[in-house]
Length: 422
Figure 1 (cartoon, one colour):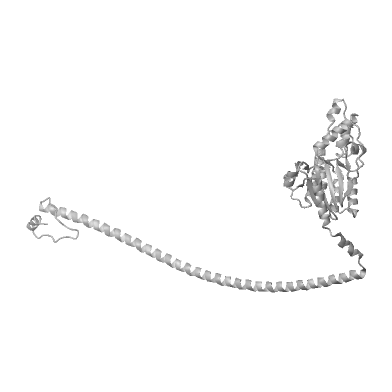
Figure 2 (spheres, rainbow, N blue to C red):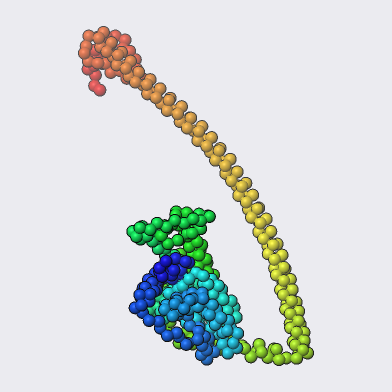
């Protein structure tokens, strides 16, 4: 097994890809004897500056990191961070806490517990997170439990996601003429053995574990009420300006600005009033308690009076509402009566229209009959005139009107009539 196998294939990571690659390169360089170990830092994780407890969280975050991880990668022990937080909460000189973070993230193991320690501390003292470098993945999970999160404009924030690199060395083993067989009880036992590829079921199991951790991660960063959209929780990191746009963090100029805010919050805490209470005698405390009881009784009477007034107003409102309902009911009945009356009138008018329409049709029929009769009389008169002319032996038609003229008595009268003046 190589050093890279030991580093990457044992547990999932909450860390950026760039940091993972950098750690891999450092590991290779170290084991190739091309890199010397740095001197261990003598700086404690906790320092106090004028009432502000500053906890330094730099480098990859691990739980109980080994010597190589601590010295070579500059890893921070999450257990030590939790202890520093507890110490800061316990110290009376520490009024507020600042997590000074510059970390790409770390292992899943230990991160939820440290984040919970931060959340518990926030219930007792004001605690802010700040970064001028990186506040990504596991580091952001931890920072999200603070009262406020700040970053400078050039810092990187976010990377809400989980990753687990797996090195499949089966091809390398085969190229060397080696074949690895694993005898195990259980289809997931022996999973990840060097020289053996993962089965589909094993891949599905790993992915389900990753999805479970990712769901816990998202729930944690939303637990303090930050409205972070889903599109900002897909494993990407942001500049401080974009992080502020997605409600991941606020933007500040420097760490001193955050410390000044913490000191301002601490100055508003009325610590003397809390300590003076404990210095009072039992008699004074009893007197204060009796005064408090009297105040509460007076408040109760005032509330009772307000409740009585409110009840009276409710009854008045109910009576007014009932009167309005009755008035509306009467108006509705009147409207219904008028509607029925108008409906009857409309039916009557429709009947008159139908009768008049029928009468108009009858009159039109009579007019057509009269016109037909008139045309028939004209035809008959013309036929009679033609008959008379034929009998008289003349081509001049006799003047006969449809009403009819008195027939001439003799042929002479008929002859003379044609020469008469019109």
